[in-house]
Length: 317
Image (tube, rainbow, N blue to C red; front, side, top):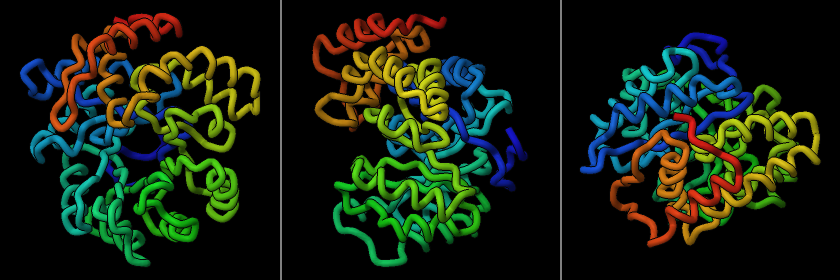
């Protein structure tokens, strides 16, 4: 990694795979720090993994107390032994409380923050200039470098092209996690952002559309990186080489896993499925989640494990 780990620089490089790890729990629902150590040390040991984004959707970050959030950040920082940066999801609703959350994340050891939109915007939309203000205030008050997070186009929290360009030009914003999930917008907007903001690291988070988006990006920031980091790193390489044949081969190999994890009734169920996938790979012992997530329906675990066997994703420990 280029630059220090203390959040005082935006020079570290996420041009590769940045998994968004789950937060493991014990069977009685407490944070499982031993499992965090296993998961983080495994991911951090893989050449091509550039960082970890914790406390996001896959990490059930909004389901944790403030004390648990800080402890999870610290545990993942310890697990990677300072080899790669740990980035924290910043999810609080209001800008001032998001800035306080970013301060706590930095104090716990986070090198950067993935700043979510204010979730009231999902229902009601946002006033012009409000997203730009959110990024400005959070960075000024915390000093934590930030990743721009583009939400799906079918939500009212999605940012216009101009809003993304504005945010990307602000101090402290060094990368974009784009999950617009509208390929018409993706195909037209990404080249413009690349041209007008050439220093911005562009990362796709389209777990279910990685083949389509692999050819336009610097890397992947995906929950999928929990369960299949090795082939995803190869897919990134194929995308950068514009090798469609190789990329398609990797996509097709992973398709049973993609379907079993991400083609479910809700993207939220993907988090539960990720944990079943980590059981299949030998990292977790069980797939316990915290409400408002629920266990998957009967037979889902067997289906997911069969998909991993079909994709030749075996146990790592």
